[in-house]
Length: 400
Image (cartoon, rainbow, N blue to C red; front, side, top):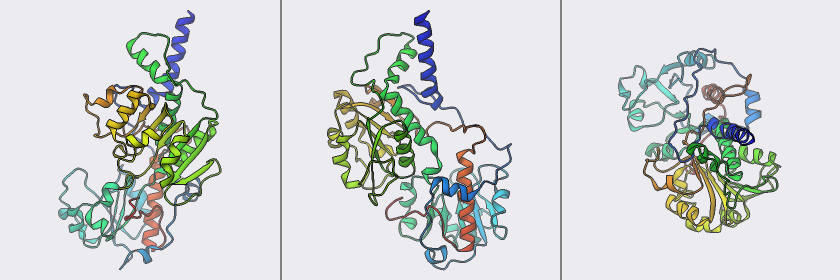
C-alpha cells in the first residue's frame, strides 16, 4: 500500500511538472494544441499597464525620424489570427484601410487587391515577392521574437525597412519551460519519467543530481525578455543568479552580477545551471561547443530555450556521455523536428521538448499572452500612424 501510494504521488508530481508542460523524455510526444479563443470577445486591455508590467522598450526616435519619406499610412496589410481581429485593430487606426493578408505559402502578392497602397505589414514577414508588390511598404511589424531570418532578408539587411518585433517578454511560457526543465533535472524527475514509461519502479540512481535548489547558482546567458523572467523565478526559488547581456552591466536587483557577453567563458564555470536565452546572431552561432562545455562545472546542468544553432549538438552529446555536463534540457534542436534516429535522442540525462514550448493556459482572470502580444501590436499601429515613437524596434545590424 505504501509502495502504491508513493508511486501515485510520484506520478502526480511528474504529471504536473512534465506532462502538463508538454514535455517529452526522449519520446516523441506532441504537445496539445492551444485552445482556440475565437468565440470569446477580444479584451480591450490596458496598454499602460502592459508596458509597466513587461517593460517594453520604447524607441528614442519617432517614426518621422526613423523612416525616410514617412507619410501617414493609407493602408496596412494584416495577417489576423481570428476573424474579428481586424475590426478590433481598426478602432486604433480608424482612418487607415486594413487589408486582410491571405494565408499560406507562395502567395501571389501582386494579385492582392490594394497591395500597391500598403505602407505597413502586420504579422507578415518580408519576402522579395511582397516587397516587389508593395512599393510604398516601409514598416514590418512581426509577430516573432527571434529575428535571425527576417534580418537576413537582403532588403531588410540593407536598412530599407523599419522592423518591430513581438518581444519575448510577452511570452511567459518559454521562461516557465526553462524553470520547469531546471527543477525536473535538478531533482532527477526525468529518471522517474523513464521508469513510469517502462512501468517498472527501481531505486533511482541520481548520479551527481538530486540537488537542493536553495543557494545553487544559475547563469542566465542573455538577460533579455525571457532571460529576465528566468532570473526572477530562479531568484524566487532561493538561487543565486548571475547573467550576461550584450549592452551593459545593468540588471534587476535579483541578479547578483551582470557580465558582458565576452565574460561568458569565465562565468560558466561558476554556475550549477546554465540557461541559454540568447538571440541567434553571428556571435552566438555555435557558441556552446566543446570548449565552452569544458569550462562548465563538472556535472552542471545545461538548458537551452533559445535557438538550436547556438549549440554544437555532437559536442553536447559527448559532454553528457563523459559526465562533464550532468544533464541537459533542450527546447530547440537542429533540425526541427528532430528525426527519430538522431543521436541526440540516445544521449544520457536529456529532456527534449518542442521549440514552441508548452501551450499556455493562463490562470482564471489572467489575459492570454497572445492577447497581450496583439495589444502591443495595436499600440504600435496607432503610434506609427501618428508618426510617434514605437515599441520593440529591431536593430537590424545587431540582429535583435
